Image (tube, rainbow, N blue to C red):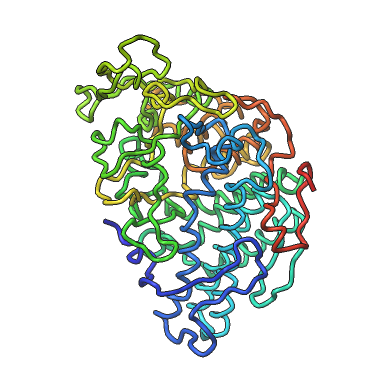
Length: 539
């Protein structure tokens, strides 16, 4: 079992956080008061703990759901009324969410919480730490975490309030997206000289220099979306900083899948910044990420994966997205469960015994209660057999086997709970290579002897035994990114940049471009009257 404290250097913190989830300006208090400010290196590290705990706390929920369920990558229909949840998931698919949607609100709450907690920790440490290299690095790490959270808010909501002064409890109006972009850029550039240059276990779970450079590359690649101005040469330069560090490498084909296993961690050569999870850590915000095995593994395959619980299994992909996996020699195909299912020996069928009516709720024969045994066969299409309006496939075996399932974050059989040990990468080296390739294709200058084609083949050579590509287009690159970063919460970002977010897939027909950003949640506007609603949404 991995220990988060081993990587972050954080003892279990007895810290009680009282925060505003929606208003960055409400005071945040902890047991760390001016009378008991931290006084040594161990206590300084403890002070940073709530920031990382807060970031980890909802990363696997609100970030993933908003970035993936709103695309053709993932869908979560109801099954016999299960998972209807006040239309929260359905709205993600149809692009008809409102300011009252619980998932949209959760993303705002979570990112605001990390920003507010960062402001507090920065304020405490600025006052209590002696000047020197340790202070400069610690503060820069916290400011980078705050910048990451502001990036998520800016990417998801557009114009957002900038509040970086702990103790200022006045309401703040939204700042223009371009202003927020410039703030994040400035913060990251100022942090880089002071961030730790090392990678691996010494910095794992905390931002290092290349975390900031990789995030800058992500910003510059999307700069035209955020600011209206292209920054492709800046993207190339930021990517080159990561590449030239020599700290990272593309995982070979033989270990690609292992990058996402429960025993992953700082030994993974591609991880620039990853979120560590440990199901045994139960302090506030230290929950293991539970949303993959629980939501993605079919109920019938509990024994196959040795799980101590029965999965809920509501989540799958769509045929439109799975069509990207069209190379039989690609190791990335193995992250999917498709078709007839077998135990891990590859020979023994996964079978379920039910009744004829239990298999097909629409069975009309007189022997509906008769026993029926079948081999599980996962089918690609989602069919709303029970109720189209309620987005309901039905509550029988046919319905529960609809949709190909992703097990990239491989189920953790060692955990005694539904939580998993799998750490989740936020920034990976292959992303840096593909970002640079895309920036060059879009007009950026080629550097370091690289071309867009050579960069893409650097990744593909470690993913498939098929011959390297001889040419590459933006459409090719889009599909390659879909294959490479499946289930890593980057697909919405990619779809918007490639102009595909308003397309049609599954049951979605909505083409409104204003939905490239989410509405400001109602509860946030109640707490902060200075907030105005985003364009397109009811004011």
